[in-house]
Length: 109
Image 1 (tube, helix red, strand yellow):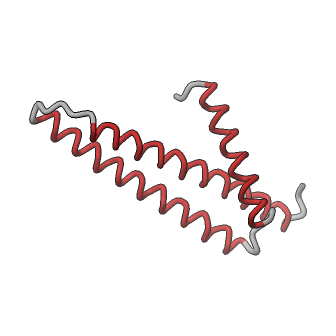
Image 2 (cartoon, rainbow, N blue to C red):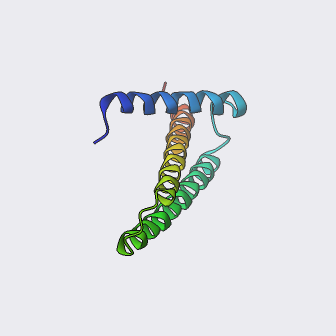
C-alpha cells in the first residue's frame, strides 16, 4: 500500500489533471461514446507503459543472471514506472469527467 501522503499527492494530481482537461475541453464529454473512447485511449497508453516497464524488468533480470551491476536499466525502469503513474492519473481524471457527463445526463448533481 502506498504512503498516505503520497496518496494525497496522487489525488491532488488527479484534480489538477481534471482541471486542465475541463479548462481545455469542457466539463462534459459530448456523449458516453466519447467518454469511453478517451478512457480507452488513456488505458492503452498506460498498457504501453506497463509493457515498457516489463521489458526493463526482463533486462534487469538478465543483468542479475550475468552478475552485471548497472543502474542504467534500473533508472529506465523507474522512468517507465513514472510514465505509468502519469497515465494512471490521466485515466482517473478522464473517469472523473466521464462520471460528471453521465451524472449530468441522469440529472444527478
